[in-house]
Amino acid sequence: MNARRPSLDVAVVGGGMVGAACALALARRGFAVALLEAREPAPWRADAPEDLRVIALAPSSARLLDELGVWRDIVAARVSPYGHMCVWDGASGAELTFDATRDGRAQLGWIVENRLVTRVLWEALEAAGVRRMCPAHVASFAQRDVRVTLELGDGENVSAALLVVADGAGSALREQAGIGVRGRDYHQRAVVAHVASERAHAQTAWQRFTPEGPIALLPLADGRSSIVWSLPEARAREVLALDDAAFLAAAGMASDFRLGAFTATTPRASFPLRLQVAERFVAGGCVLVGDAAHVVHPLAGQGANLGLRDVAELADGLGEARAAGRDFAAAHVLRRYARRRRSAGALDAYAFDAIERAFAWQAPGWSALRGLGLRALDMITPLNRRLAAHAAGRAGV
Ligand SMILES: Cc1cc2nc3c(=O)[nH]c(=O)nc-3n(C[C@H](O)[C@H](O)[C@H](O)COP(=O)(O)OP(=O)(O)OC[C@H]3O[C@@H](n4cnc5c(N)ncnc54)[C@H](O)[C@@H]3O)c2cc1C
Image 1 (tube, helix red, strand yellow):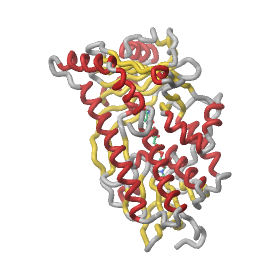
Image 2 (image 1 turned 45 degrees about the vertical axis):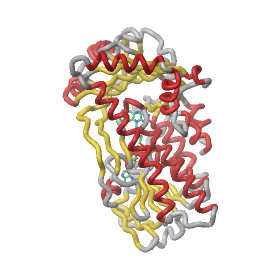
Image 3 (image 1 turned 120 degrees about the vertical axis):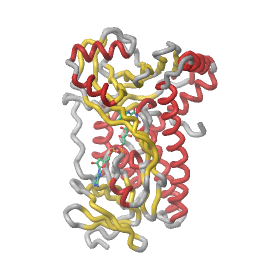
Image 4 (image 1 turned 30 degrees about the vertical axis):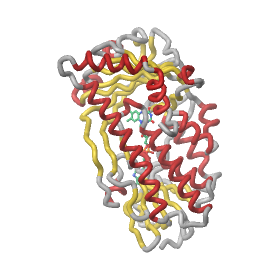
C-alpha cells in the first residue's frame, strides 16, 4: 500500500492517445485517476514539423473526444475531414468507393496527427483532476488483496483498485499479467511520408492494393497527402534508402498516379506491422486497452479507433457499476468489458488480416475473382453502406 497515493481508484499506465483518453474519460466520471507515462508527449505546434504518424479518426472516435471536451480544440488546431474513400485492386483494376453523402453524412472521418490528439488530451488531464505522473516508468506490478501496487523505476510505489494497461503493442505489463498474444508478424513495414502532388486529393482517402501490400494516400489539411505504404521488410528498406526523386517516382507508380506525379516529400519514417490480439483483456484487477490489447494492420486505419472504443466501453461499464453503488473493479464488471471488446477487437483484427491476405495472394485467376467481388461490393448499396458504417465505428454493425 502506498502512503503517497492512498485513494486512487484507477492507475492508467501509458499516456499515448488511448491511455490519455481513458484517464480523462474515467476522471470525467468521478474516478480518482493517475496517469503514469515514461515520456512526456512532444508538444504540438502548427508551425513545427508535422507528425508523420497521422490517423484516420472515425466518427465514433470524434464523438468520444467531443464528450471528453477536447474535439473542439483538435478541430481548431488542424484536422482534415474526408468525404470519400476509393479503394482499388492494382491487379484487376476493380474499384470500391464510399461516399459520405450516400449515407447522409458530411464526412466519413478526419485525418489527424497522432501527436496533436495526444497532446490535447494531455492538456485536459490536469483540469479534470487526473494526477499526471511523468516521467514515470512502471517497472512491475503486484496484485495485493483488492488493490494493485505498481512499482516505479525510481523505487516508488503507487496503488489503485484497478490497473488499466495502455502501454502499447510491446506491453511489458501485459506480459507480467501472464496474458499471451495471438497473431502473426507481417514481416512488413509501413513507410510513411507527407507528399505534395500535381492533382488535388479532393478530400478523398485513396488506397491501392498491390501484391507487395497496400499504399494509402490520406488527405491532409494543407493539400498534401500522407502516404502509408505497407511493404515487405526488404523492399521497405530499399524504399527508405531511395533519394527523394526516386521515392516520389516509386510512390507515384505504386499509387497508379491517381494524384498525378508527386512533387515534394518530407523525410520518411517507418513502422513494423503485426497482427496481435491478447488472449485475455483482463487478469485480476488489470485491464488491457488500445494497442496493448490489439494491434491491427493499418490498411483499414482502425487501430486507434478500436482503442478509443475500448475506452468508451470501459468508462461506461465502470461508471454504471459505480452509479449503481457496486464495486467498479468487481470481476463481473471487468469480464463484461473483456467479453465485448475482445470479440469486437479480434473480429476486426482478423477481418483486416483476411483482407491483407486476399490482396497479397497471387494464384492464377484469383485477381480476376477478387476484381469481380470488389465490383459487386461497389454495386450493392446496402452492403457498401454497411462497410462504410463499420469503418465509421457505428454500433450495431
Ligand atoms: C503506420 C501506421 C498507421 C496507422 N494509421 C491509423 C489510422 O489511420 N487510424 C487508426 O485508428 N489507427 C492507426 N494506426 C494505429 C494507431 O497509431 C495505434 O493504434 C495507436 O496510436 C495506439 O495508441 P496506444 O495509446 O494504445 O499506444 P501507444 O501510442 O504505443 O502508447 C503507449 C504509451 O505507453 C508508454 N509506456 C510504455 N511502457 C511504459 C511503462 N512501463 N511505464 C510507463 N509508460 C509506458 C509509452 O511511452 C507510450 O507513450 C496506425 C499505426 C501505424 C503504425
